[in-house]
Amino acid sequence: MVLTVEGIVLYSEDLDRARAFYRDVLGLPLLLDEGHVIHFDAGTIRLAIHRCPPGQRREAPEGFLVFGVEDLAVVHEALRLRGAEFLGPPANRPYGRVAYLHDPEGHEIGLLEEPRKGTEGHRRVAPLVERYERVIGGLNRGGAGSQGL
Image 1 (cartoon, rainbow, N blue to C red):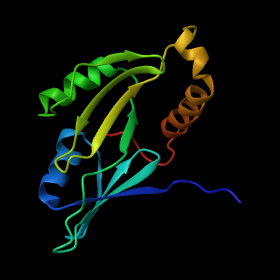
Image 2 (tube, rainbow, N blue to C red):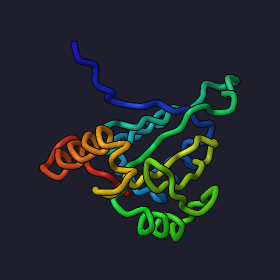
Image 3 (spheres, one colour):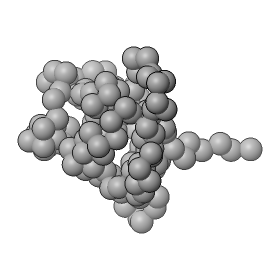
């Protein structure tokens, strides 16, 4: 039996702000808007934002989303111009270049540019990079959707 992540669900107290952030700032295509839930095409998965039930405010969000990007400098600047407020400048890590921001509810979002082939970072994370390249290759061939970034 093989399990595949099809979607991720987050909660929001303000779906209008969430819609504007994910659609207009991050550029994810809107798939469905039902008033109490909105769905976005996030490449290989569906991202759903559900309205918090009345009186059931969620605690501070835990965990975070990570979006793979081809060129972090270009994506960082484009999102900054659309109003994204980053937690700091892009940074080099052993596993690639990263930048982080929050959505309107405080969910952390990471942007990750995988290390280039031939670098020590690439050798360390080669299995992850190979998986990412397979996913991107499938998208480029008309697979499960498109990266809105």
